Image 1 (tube, rainbow, N blue to C red):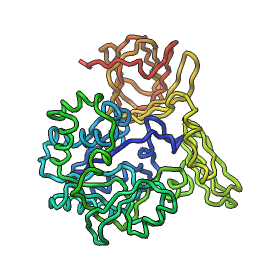
Image 2: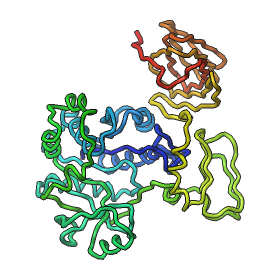
Image 3: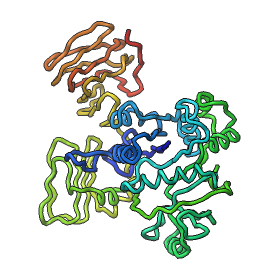
Image 4: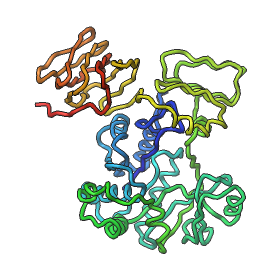
Length: 437
């Protein structure tokens, strides 16, 4: 199975656990068999490889998410990086070109596209395989998954099939309706459009070549910022006559708000939290190193991270975005390909972070124009390289670096540092990468 996972999202509806770098699919709230927790993207990736160990998985995403993907899934997963946001058709076209020109997938092979963050069980991935097999038959150019609705939702578009068979030609599409229209569509046998579909690779390549005029993946990538912003539905789906829909009767949830996300939590609390017996339907997620105590509350979500603290009625939590839009601060936590960092303190001319490097990983060899840095090693062992000079480091060591100094750190074991940044213009953009000789 060749599968493209669409990974987007601004991360605002699940603030403070998400931000512009850490979208909802990277939040670890799903309990695993060993008692730990995994994120949506880890869960979906694991489920895909369980259903098909030979699956080719490519994640279509922005540059800001690449480090988090590598951190959570490792280096082997395929990533198609959008140079900038251009909506779903350019993103899918770029990922399809990546599969063909970089991964060597033939044009006759079927490709399945779906969001990276549905909450589903294993039968969903069996259905994805069947969707790809239906596309391979060639009886239609495009095969959609139609999810059997469990209630009249105003959040989704609807697909109305020609008949009630497991696979049917599509009669028509309906945009996101009001409640009365949703009820009427369901009476007509309509299915939710969850943005899941399959096609032969060459079909989308041909569509893309006609609309975008490119030769191969590298050419498309180079001109990506000039492309029209257009959705796959508008560019392809609504104009395609040879289109089928396959029914999916299993569980499918979009965990896009705190209210829906907490419904999928096995435990009522994650992290250092206590909930007294008088509470009802209360969930706490705490990423801070201080305890949270909830007493006498009902239908409430409490979430705490370095980004901030949310205390909200679950129903009201759906309306969080306009308030989060007003918040302007540094990103306070991020996962990187080499580990993670957490901002501990921000002053006008300094910033203090706790940095954790995973064993065997290293930062890029880099320098800063406008700030000095000091590393205080608090645990672990590794090696620092400063202007080409190597130094073994362990707990208690201090490394100082002036602006312009080239440096990196390499972890032998898990390595934890306190990093102090000093300067009048501290910015995430003040970083120049170099080649470590």
